[in-house]
Amino acid sequence: MEVRPRLSWAALRLIQAGAVFLLLLGAGSWRGGSDLNDQELESFLRATTSRWCAAHPDHDNLQAVVVDVRFHGEPPLFAQGEGTVIAPLGIDLPGAQRVLDVAGAPAHLRRLTTPAVTALAWEYGGRVHRDMRFRGVALVERSSLAALTLPSAPTFDDLAADLRPEASARAVALEEHGLHKCAAFSAWAARSAGARPHTAQIERLVQAVAARVPDDKGGEDLCADIRMGRFTPHRAQVAVVMAAREMGIPTYGFASAAGGKSHLVGTFVDGAGWAFMDVERPGDGWFTGGPPLLTMAPVLGGFAASPHDLWSPEAGAYTPNQWQGVGTLSSTQWKDRLPAGPPTDTTEARVLRLADVCR
Amino acid sequence: MSSLPPPPLTPWRALGLRRAGTPDLAFCGAVLGLVGLALASGNAAGRRLSPEGAQSTARLLDELELPRSLPNAMLARDDGLDTRLWDVATAPRTIVTFYAPWCAPCQDELPTLVKGTSAHSDRLTVIVGPDEDPAEVRRKLENLGLKDQRFHVDTRRELEAGGRVTALPTTFLIGPMGKVHERMVGYSEVRLQMLLYKATSGDVLTPEADGN
Image (cartoon, rainbow over all chains, first blue to last red; front, top):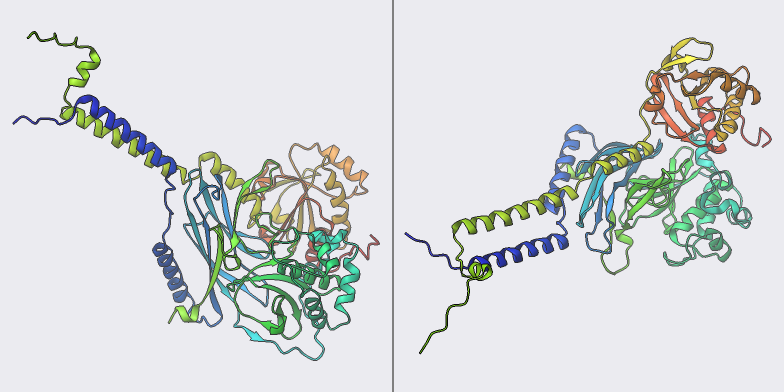
C-alpha cells in the first residue's frame, strides 16, 4: 500500500529548523529544575534519623540539626560559576555540645572541621542556571534547655586551662571588627561592665547594647555603634563578647539553630559549665542547654568560608580567588530573619529531638 | 485558448514540489532526537563541576580542612641522621613548624617558638624543604641567635604533601603518631602563644610576661 506523505520536503525542513530553534531557545532559558525535591530531602532525613535512632538507643540529650541551603536559579540572583557550598552544622565545645555525626544530601564532598566548628561542603556546579538545594544534618549531644540559677559569687576558675587563652583573647590581639583601632572601646567596656562577678558584668554589657538600629543600617562600623549607643543584633553580640574579654572574661558569641538565629553570648560558670544569654532577650536570663549551637566566634585564625568569620551560620558558595584565598561566589541569608520581599538565596535550620523522632 | 508554458523547473522549485517520504521523516526525527540528547547531556554536565572546577575546589577544601594527621615522613636531621617524624614528635603535644631562611615571617615566628619551648625542647620540630641549602639555613639560625637549634629536612616532601603546606610559615600542633590538633598558616603572635600554651601545658611566656 502506498503511503502518501502530507508535507512537502521543504515544509518538513522548515518545521525541523523551527523545532531545533525552539529546542535551543528552551535550553537557554531552562533552569533545569532542582536536583532534589522535597520528597527526596524528607526521605533522606527519615533514613538518617532512623540510622541514628538505631545506633543511639540512649538518646535523651541527642538532637538532630537540619540545615537547608537553597540557591535560586533565576537571574540575576543566580551566581554562575563553579565552587563549593559550605554550611556550618554545629560546634564542639567541651561541656556544652558535641557533634557526633553528620550526613548530607546530595552526598557531601567533605566534612570540614575547624578547631571548633563542623561544616559540610558540597559541589556548586553552577555552569547552568538552576535551583540548587542542599541539606546537611548533624547529630549533636546537647542537654535540654534549662534556666540557670547562678551561684552567689560566680567564678570561672575551673575552665580548662587550654580553653582559657582562646576564650579570652582580646580585640587588640584578634583585630576583631576593627575594635583594636577604636579609641572609645576599652573605656566603654570598662564603664559598661562595672565590677565582678563576671556574669553580672556580661548582664550589664547586654543592657548597654540594648538600643537597636535595623539590621541593614550602619555597615560594619562597630566603633560608631559604640559611640552612638545603638547596635544591630549582630554588632551588639560582638560588642558584648569583645568587651567581656576586655575585662578578662572567657566569652564567645554563639549562633543557635533556633528558628530566628538567636545571638547568644556564652561564658563559663564554675559548677554549671557554659552558660548562655540571648543578647536580644536578656529578660530570659541565663540558661544552659537548648537548641544546638551552629557556630561560635571569634575562633582563632577564623574560617575564611564564612560570611562573618563564624559569627553567623549562613551557608555560602565559595571559590578560590586570584590571591590563593577564598572568594565568595554566592551568599545566603537566614530565612527566618528575612523581611517580606522577593525570593532570595537562603539558609534555614530546624531541630529535631531524637527522643521524639525515634518514638 | 492557449496555455502558458510551465515555468522552468529550478532546483528550488523542484524541492518545493518534492513530497517528503518516510526516510525524510526518519531523518528529521533523528536530527531532533540528537539535538535534544546533546542539550540534555550538556545541561547534565553543567550541573557537575568541570575537571578544572573540581581541581580548584579540591585545593580550596584542602586549604580549609585540617589534615587529620601528619605522615610518618622520612626526615634528615641537620647532622645527617635519618629519622622519621613520629620518632621525633613523641611528646603529648609537639609543635611542628615549616621554616625557610628566605621567609620573612618565619624569622619572627621561630625565635618565639624556640623561646616558648625552651623548657621542653623536645616539643618543637623545625622542618625545612629539600630545596633549602642546609648551610644557609644554619647561617640564618645563627643570625637569629638560634645556633643550637636543630632542624630536619623533609627529604621526600612527604610532610609538605601530607600537611597540605602551601604557604610559609605553617605550624602544626600535633600529638603522638602525627595526630593534628591545630594548624596555623602565617604568623600571628596571639595564635602562636595559644599553640605554645597548649604544647607546654600552660608554662609559657605570655606577651605581658615577656615584656612585649
